[in-house]
Image (tube, rainbow, N blue to C red; front, side):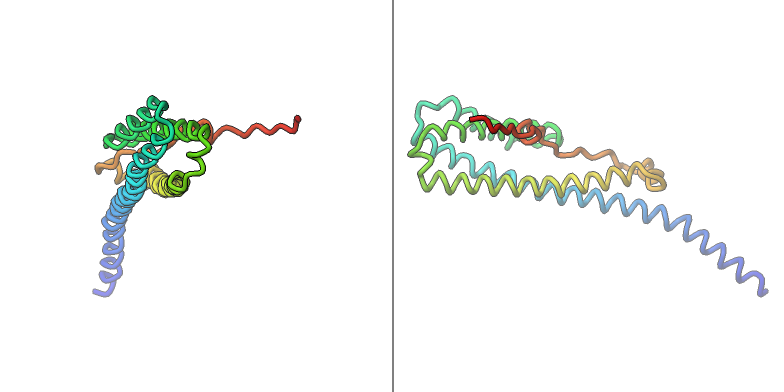
Length: 191
């Protein structure tokens, strides 16, 4: 009777490993997928903050630069398109990039108006926009880190065995292809 106890213990340990590990791997993938959703929520909150801020900035610029209507309309159109896009992350990133470009164009136009640049309203809104862009960048980094962890987990052994059985498609990164951010600044010491 005594030799049967170690065999039962070994059988129980093997059963626990065979059943327990796949459950743990599945739960890991589910947890990572939820982290992606949560971190996207953080990105979304910051994007909505930008969407709310931009019309105020456009109105202040409009008060000083009435004849720049085309530039201001482009900003509002890009804002509305980005705000309404709730499709995949890649498409939303493209709309966000258009919004960033249009906003930069508007701020470049504002440089031509010294009274506007000195306006406390404009300066406060511009500082809020810079702060919001920093928050978006931080939220995007957090989101992309979670996407990376999830995508690595779902494609590495042994977790990939469980990912193939469940609904664990690859997650998209929220990338902003901003030429001005990636371009090295030109430095010249010529007079």
